[in-house]
Length: 209
Image (cartoon, rainbow, N blue to C red; front, side, top):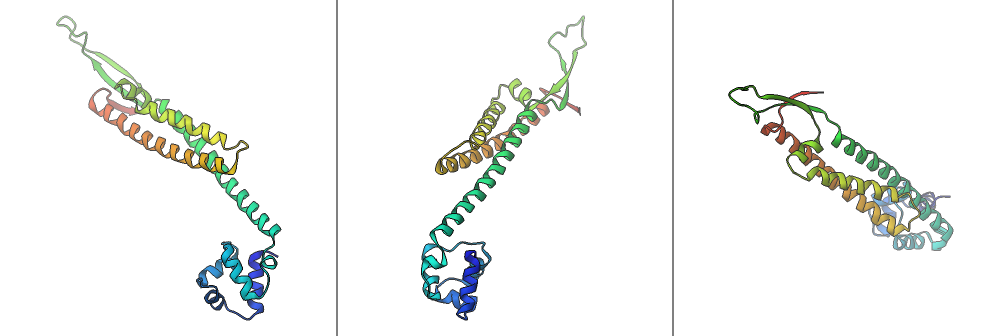
């Protein structure tokens, strides 16, 4: 029998409502509801209070083996969640890397450097521009920064699949999320900077390829 089922069984066994049980252990009725639904696990202090109210030992309410299984289940659920998140971050980071080098705008401009009275017609220059090309052309390293951060994020998320200690894995997971968020912000800035370059006259926005 699961802990939440035991709490419900013992509460009903001594004829208490959820509100009455909550008042006896000094918590809200909502928390008792969560205990009995299994969505929240009682603290050690509240487990002790519940066992006193029910007139049983703490181990009867929750044995060491059951406690271990609950902790293990919680760890597995957390691991699955972070695994899904890591895969998502890797895929998005790869997409950002691809998006940074794929030309998706065609520019059109004129080169007046060779214009002379004998040759008054400027050279019409066209080509494709990507975020990386646009920013590097203007000697701005912003796109390089987010590319490096995206690669770092991919490496950190990949390391998450290795055999790591719980504390190390937690630090790595949090760090990878932070790096990803920063890289995403810089990517958006790079995208905006590319448009400012196009509109400044270095590139002339003509059409989308």
